Length: 359
Image (tube, rainbow, N blue to C red; front, side):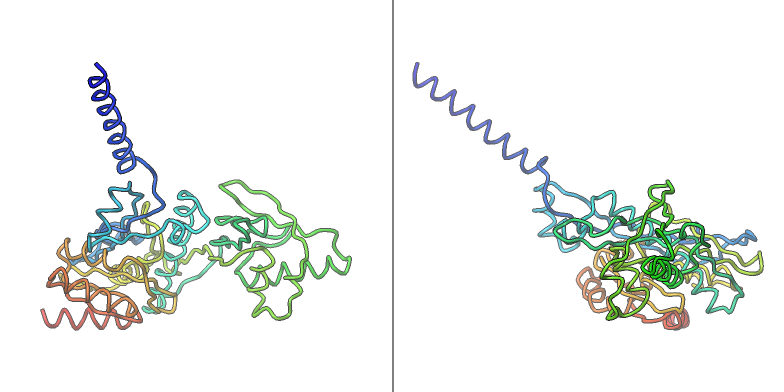
């Protein structure tokens, strides 16, 4: 009888350990994130002209990585999969929650869309006007995981109480610093700033600090950032062509981040010019872009090579800073897709022309 009980006890213990191990592998949260190949989709449906002119024959592909929160088994599989990269959550999210991080990427994407449109207008010498709608905090300063100021990532800085809307980060810096100087002299009782947080407008009182009087600050913009406890800003602007038929709009849905800037600009130029810029080819592109046409580095390049190759892209334009990694990945998966690194919009257009002439 005792031997029977011992056998039953062993069965129960084994089952409990097995269940615990399976729970740990499949359900226990981990401190890791995995970057894996995501989408590579035509950018043309995301860009439209107010005149309604459709895109021409070829396709520009926008590519984005997929970010997942895996279980332990997923982490183990990803660590031996050459198409995936494993990162600590803290190295990606920083001090933000997943929701806050996603919101931050959405804000950055919105700003990058306007930069892309402006880059296209500048390149084609299309007359346009720029109007700043808001200045958005994209990152804040923290000490011991606590914000040093009252502002939060995603807050929109609108205006000082009774003042005109901020026209730029520099304009905001000038207005705020001048107002605080007046308060320091006793000419103002308080300095109130109107902000928008999560869709609601509110007033926030600003106080002079040692940061504000620091003459060693590099610029008024830097002084403003330190004063507000912010690391970085982005200007949400409307970029509108003078002539109605040349006005562009971009709708990227839930795609976040700035890495689609280059492909948006190329798609915009294709819409605004005669003929097919791709000359019938499937061309993928990734990289940030400035209004001046400078292309910047991005993350997840290995995953993007996999996804664009899987969608039969013939040419993949990548930032010059990412070219080496992209070429290495292309070689490892034995793709015929041509990869070209570029530093500027002009180099990207030259690469497209050269590729088309050799097809």
